[in-house]
Length: 271
Ligand SMILES: [Zn+2]
Image (cartoon, rainbow, N blue to C red; front, side):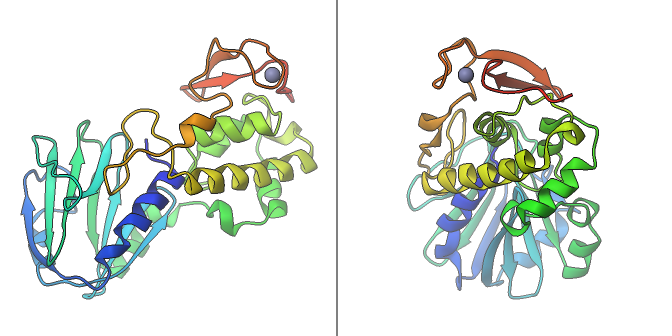
């Protein structure tokens, strides 16, 4: 699933659309459209005034004051056609601009697209309950928020209501760098270690953004290009391989229903 760095990379790639108007929209399937497909016909003639990201959501701001919001979920892709013509059976939307075409493709079909007024956006439960952006919360506030909970630390990092944009990759990587076992009880982790976790999370996210995100499975950016952060994984996808720090074999466990990779020697379990 594209996480914060991947969506940020896509956002940057789509900035070319700013100031362009949607000349035509080709709706190839309607299942992904919220709240209904009828209102999407109003997109014709709308100018893209800005493109932003919130958590894992990509938001296209329109001249009407409305917002076009994409959640790519497992396999959603937004690709500019000038660079790769990928119209196929997995294409659900095709946006025409004066000098570009934008495709929304999704093999697994979990992704969705909302067309909301500002009021609807603000009332949308998913939006209202999104936690802070990792870059916009201080390490002290992060540690305070996390230390209130008895839940395990990884499930909190994955919880979009606690902090927005983190998924399996960046949770595992930041916990490894912070030497915290993913099953550690949050309220048992020392405050300074939690502050350090926030700093490492920022470090990992920024590095991933600078490398164009991670392309472990399907992810490609808006130019159809793969990211490079997967070449820098310490633990993610490395079960059974040796830890780069201590040479111990990395173990695969389940946390919050998600496959999790841990070094039992490097990562301390607080409980
Ligand atoms: Zn180790």
